Length: 170
Image (tube, rainbow, N blue to C red; front, side, top):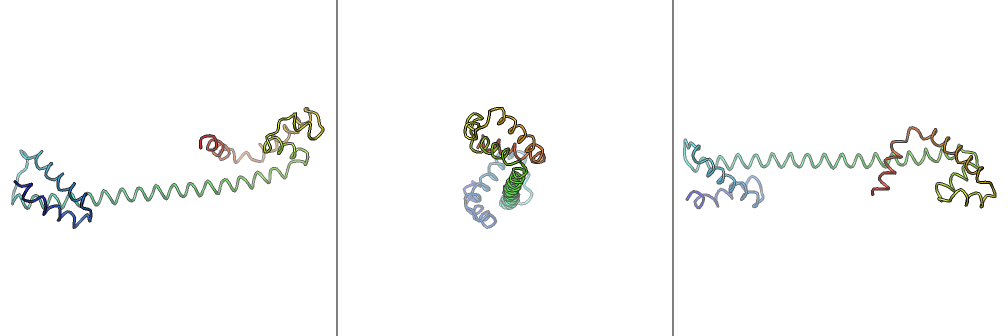
């Protein structure tokens, strides 16, 4: 009887707070469910009408608080993700600049061999054939290049590993 009498008017009342009919209906339904589940414990001091209005009011305010917190967390997560993306882009640009600087340090032949191996993905034998050098010379030059590159890029190892792992996973 209470449900039939108050459901519609309480839904309109909840709507005034929530501006969402589905949310308002959920609130009122939950208030009636809670009232039914606690019917043996409920002590009505004024009237059933007053209890229902107060319950819908409190439940509506709680829902608004919950939605605000949820929105705040969603906004913070988006902001954090954007900062992370910007930081990653900055790190990648910085890394690219540092990589270019490290390549500039390499002796010309050493740099050429390194670029052919790492950027053109040629095998040592292919590099040796193209440059008319022995494989041993290629190996020595690559060892020298890798030693210099490791030394120059040691501070960037974490981001290099991050980029490599993302390129394999993504």
